[in-house]
Length: 257
Image (spheres, rainbow, N blue to C red):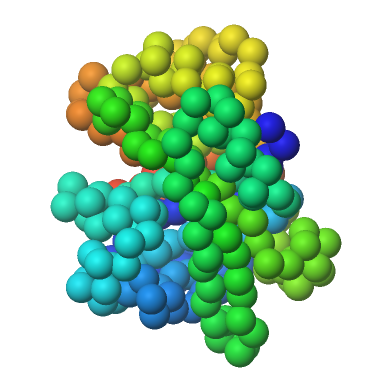
């Protein structure tokens, strides 16, 4: 499956506050825009290879609850448990073929579904999203997939100034995720992406299984201490000074490597 990591979704009451916190540490961050049909709005922080963090907030709860988009439904559900990381997405340049591949592997795709928003400079951005029907036991959550209306080279030219940060050049390198059934999660992710056996390790968060997908590393942890299937930590690398940033339920580790 030919995909590249695209972005991490961080649910927060006030995206503008997360943006300001990152700016104080020397990151370039921007206001994104509003999604009127979803009842949400966002702020963004971009990194090398078009990867980015999306801080997303719910502005119109009724619209968010009834819009029918699986990502927004997930955000509404996660909000009941508290803010923090919710989802992550992989980018594709052929979402229709990807949907067929998922079906052939035994998954149930939802979509493709259209999305759009108007940037603060007036340009209208468009994209298409593809989801996978939830795990039957709720032991883990699938990522989703996105195809942008503009090609990567066009987006790279437009976003180049936003990828340059006063603090230095940064790379979104890994995401840590809780699961309620580690073995089954790894088996399903391997089948989903066609991956080799994982590498196992241990760190301050506990024992994990590591998979490399679309240029990013995913660390999966059994959720012994709390029943969660959400991402809980994001690592950014590329600068000398180390930071641990705690923002509205999400943890960011920034380091040299």
